[in-house]
Amino acid sequence: MKTINSLAFCFVAALITASLSIPSPTLAQGLPPAAKQKIEATQKPVRTIGMEDYRKIVEHPGEALIIDVREPQEYAAGHIPGAINIPRGVIASQIWNHVGSSEKANLERPIVLQCQSGRRATLAAETLGELGFTQTSAVIMNLDDWKTSGNPFVK
Image (cartoon, rainbow, N blue to C red; front, top):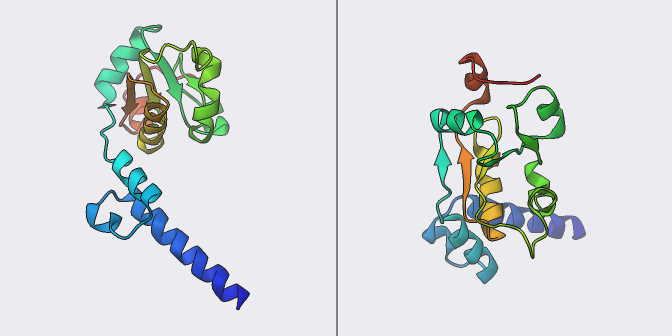
């Protein structure tokens, strides 16, 4: 019986997780209030930019904090010059090392988040938005396309 209850819990958890990743008012019906709040929060748009806009930012270092949210081994294999590595899974706790304490941080400082394709960068931008950062952008592009287009890349 304990195994069945554990399986049932896992199934319900999977359903809730799936519903959280697909913001839909229909799916939100019947969910706990916390789950509904998460769905509503994910419906807030994340500012995104493409390769051309990102190239302009990379060409003018210092205007924005560029964060590569890939895992350390991905970053070590090659990255955009000037990008610092803060994996998406630890962005909420590690961002303060680069912007100052939460009490003194400039929450309006431009921050550009980049990964391999834009998925993790978008999630990281959502996280920073929840922390109060107002000028975050997620780069939506394929990093392999960036490299093959002859853009700056450090190995």
